[in-house]
Image (cartoon, rainbow, N blue to C red):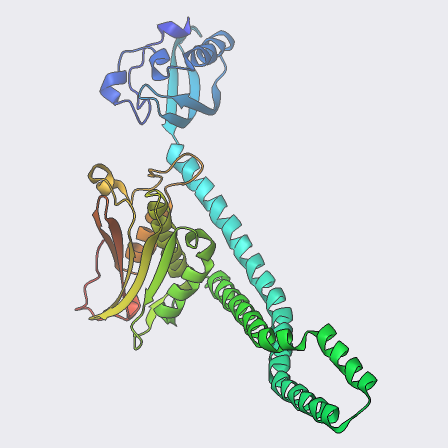
Length: 382
């Protein structure tokens, strides 16, 4: 029998096709661009009488790409005559997406461990350089004072009639050394070196804190420190597009959380804020704010970006949803944030937005871990 003559009696044809749409139709309608391949599989099974199974990529009628596993089995009558084919397909598109996400997470974990090692290697020579810069800074004032005293001696010697050749030699040496210029510029040069080394040290500390794996363990954390590390790590993203303001409550209570996961959430929010500002074409502002709110600690990431359009506000936390161009976003950042905050920490994440004005993402994390909270403390839901 031919493949095109095989009716579908019961089928969950694909994620884009309801069972009632598929009943009684031929399998070729399941895909628009690969129908010839499906018919070829059915024809081969019919001719050889052997089952087939495999994985295929189809483009459904609505234009979306689906990954499916399928099997085709021949059914014979009592006398061995082929009577029909049983075709079963299972949509595994989301499974493949999740597998790719897991692989990406594993790569990021490896990169994080590598970054921690690199940070350690950078920190040691940077500390040497800073220690020696401090030594030069402390040694410089008495040297400058000595040079000033020598200049006074030279002037006194000239008045006392010391040989002109000796005085001229000293003057030439002073000019060659550019003592006036060095005396004026050296302190600020040393201050700049110290500032640069201090900045390296801050970045290294932030990298070590951010990359340090928590291994899924809850621990008491200073959310201000976690947020500051995330801001520092993301600096290369935001420095060309925005100014960042930190508004941290000084006596903020600690929160029991999985530190690296919460740090990743904050990093994602800062990167998203940067991209929203970049779309405006103007330099903007990102404000990261922390406050204690009852039994929770609240963190806000405010931006002056484009805002979120009304049509997509209900989808921002959906896995794989993104409004960014292909290659610039996976649609996993906010879905991950929702999972970490709401499911893992029983907290809350929400946003306030106005098109053309900007967006504020609001994260609330209970101070106590889920298992330590009283029965009266109901978990927050996003």
